[in-house]
Amino acid sequence: MSLLNKDACILITSSRHKDSRQLAVSFHEKLEEKGYTSFLDTYLADTLEQPELSCPGKKPTIIFVFGGDGTILKTYEIWKNIPIFAINCGKVGFLTEIDPSGIDKALNALENGEGFIESFSTIEISSKDLETVSAVNDVVVTCDTIGQSISLKLHVDNQYVYTLDGDGLIVATSIGSSAYGLSAGGSLIVPTVEAIITVPICPFSRRVVPMVFPLSSKLKVTNLSKTKFGSVVIDGKVHYNLGHNDSIEIKQSEDKINFIRFEENYITRVREKLLRFNPDDTDE
Image: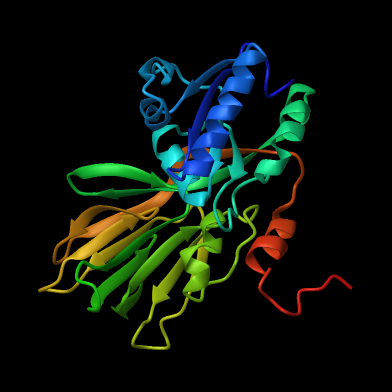
C-alpha cells in the first residue's frame, strides 16, 4: 500500500531558517499542483500571512519535515504516532532521511509505492501533580543553576542503584543514545535493541557509570539536594523543577515515533553523519 496517495492529508512543517521555509513552501505548492491535500504548520502559514493554509485540526496522514533533528522533536511533541518524512535542512540531521537535493526523486518514489515505516519506542516522564510528557530522545535532570552540582538518587524497578553527585543524569531511549548521551560518554545503542540508557554527567565518583536497562524497566530519579532545585529537560525543553525529595518516574510510553524510510540505513547514517569527522573513516 502506498504511503502517499490522493486521500492523504499532508502536513508541511519546517525550522525557522529562511532556506527551510522556502523549501517547505515550494514543496507545498508542488503537492497542491499534483492534487494532494496539503497544509502548512501554523508558523509557516502565518509567515505567508495565509492562515487558511494552516492545518485545521484534522489529523495528518503524513508529515514532511524540513529541518534538523530539533524540528523533528518539536513536530513529534504536537503530532505523535504520525509517519514523518524528514528532509535535512540542519547540520547533522541524524534522524532525517534525505537532503533537499533528493526531494523530487523521493516524492516520485513515494508516489510509486516505495518506502516503509520505521517505528521507534519512546519514554514517558511523570511527576506527582504534574503533566505526563513523552520523549523521543531523552530526559535530563540537572541543577537549575548553571555550573552547580546536584545530588540525585536512582532506582530501577524499585531497586536502589546509586546516588549521583555531579552535573546531572541523562535517561535516554535507544534512538536518543546518539544525542546528548553519546556526547556525555554513553554508548551508542542500535535502535532495534529496545532499552533505556542512563548516563551520569560529570559525576564526582568514577564508580557511577553509564548503564543500559530493558525498555520494560521503570526508573525513578529523586533530587536529594536540600537547597537546590532540579531542572527536568525533556527533548531539549525545560518542563518542570524538582524540589528536595521530589522525583520523576520514567517508563516506556505507548506513543511511537514513526519515520518513512527507503532502506534500513542506521549504520550508514552513523558512519556518514556521526563519524564523518573521524580521519580514519574508510571502508576497506
